[in-house]
Image (cartoon, rainbow, N blue to C red; front, side, top):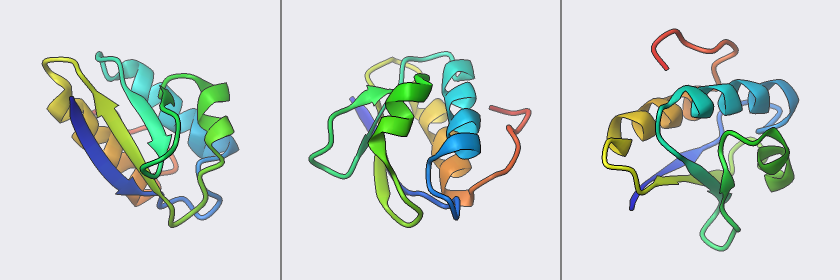
Amino acid sequence: MVERRVTVGWAEGLHARPASIFCRAAAAAGVPVTVKKGDDGTPVNAASMLGVLGLGAEAGEEIVLASDAVDAEEALERLAALVSEGLEELPETV
């Protein structure tokens, strides 16, 4: 299992538009990814808009991205950068 801990960089947290950007990036990652809030949160499918919104992750909170896929390292790095930088558009490289 590969994990990346990242602080949410979007001012509005992982809600609405940022959640949509994140979910599309997770779906395009090519590997199954889960996300949870903090150490005690329940992991949800990172490509699921309802699951991600249900986390209630606010700006500055830590989330944990995880995958047990063989090629997960690069995908998790890209998703972590997207979240920490709070990008407003889906990068072409995701």
